[in-house]
Amino acid sequence: MKKQFLYITIFLLTLFSCEEILFEEDITDDLVTIIAPSNGSQVENTSVSFSWDAVDQATSYRLQIARPTFENATQIIEDTTVTLTNFNTTLVKNDYQWRVRAQNSGSETAYTTASFSIIESEDFSAREVLLSSPEDNAIVNNTAVTLQWQSVTDATAYRIQLLDESDQVIDENTSTANSIQLTFPEGVTTWQVRAENDTQNTLYFSRTLTVDSMNPLKPVATTPANQAILTDAMISFSWTREAVEGSTEFDSIYVYRNDQLTDLVTKDRVTSPADITLDTGETYYWFIKAFDEAGNQSEASDTFSFTIN
Image 1 (tube, helix red, strand yellow):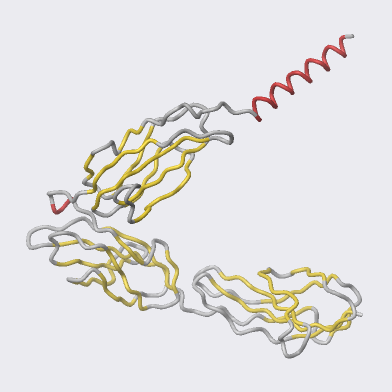
Image 2 (tube, one colour; image 1 turned 60 degrees about the vertical axis):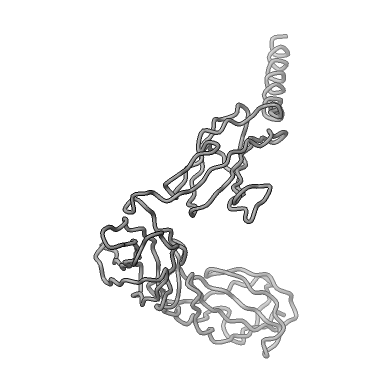
């Protein structure tokens, strides 16, 4: 009798626990309260922090930003879903409208909307230089790189610096335009820009760039050996390659049914050894090529053939 009572208790606890997991409270009638930027506010800092009060039983929030308004939008700047009650982004000087709603798996609130403006600070030194491209932490394979940023009102020039990994200045230039092409060294470099006029300057605003112009080394195919005769359809491919310093490298395998290398059977990103199942009664031709994150690629390994009986 005691055992039966125990089993029933466990079953009921499990049942209620599942109901709590499967059924979320309907939040349709709730409303998100915006904290900042509030409706009609003016923000001097172009790095904007959006925040709002949490809604009970909400698991995420959908946030959208339009320019200048959602009704007359020329651009939707952001349309994202977040789990926190804040979001940060950088905006240029303009009028904006933003809205946020709470949601869970079964329901969502209406949007709460507020309008605001980004204005430039009256203090020139407090203004921000908005960097456009390349994006932060970009990896490129060309040492000649064009840097671009947004114009700053009342600026007469921009100072551009390149810094090595020890934060030492290795190159410095000025420009009256809002772009410049510079030659970067191999490896990781920080580039930074500040605006200047006759009497003042802003702070520097920076991003990091990696230049990797070196091709990966040619892989060396090892197994299956060239012209091998095999009986197992599961083929273990292996090769060797010495890594080159720079961005992350990876290998791709190419397997063909003909020696003209036109009838592709499989192409895949792999690591050595790689097991691939193929059809029996066929002759195959294969090679390896190496690539890296910068877009460089190696020579193809020598092409090997094998037959599966």
